[in-house]
Length: 184
Image 1: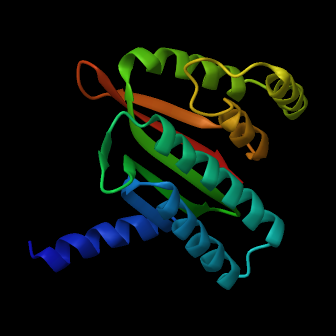
Image 2: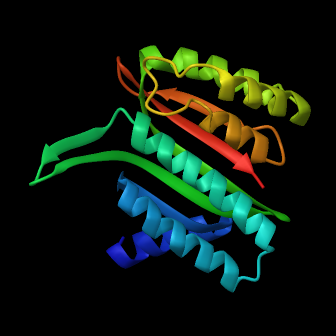
């Protein structure tokens, strides 16, 4: 199989799955900004509703920030200033009449159980429960091991039009691949 045939098949598979935007690789805040601008422009060119664009963008940003903060695959260094890059993937697509945002990245297996517990809790909540829980978490002190306010997952669940979907695949003895999908 030629390289063109192989990558055309990959491209076609993405189109068949409704993918309109995807990125896989190392991410930083600067890359997040650039990808976010490209996503907003793409959706605007497709005449998406401005409220939908805002919700998709918000979930996209939260998911990419989670990759940047929590991916177990990262490189760090100093090139005159500290550099930190985290590996993951983010996909935005259309399924029937709605958009979806999927992210995926490696996590440490010892953190996966707690992450799964939190996500199961969020997926089981209705909109009113999510709103109350969000307010409660905003008032709570930030957890010691958190690299953020620990409300990003709640934000994703609140903005999603259906319960979030997620899963884990054990990859090595100490790593699992984590994936999260939200519909808008």
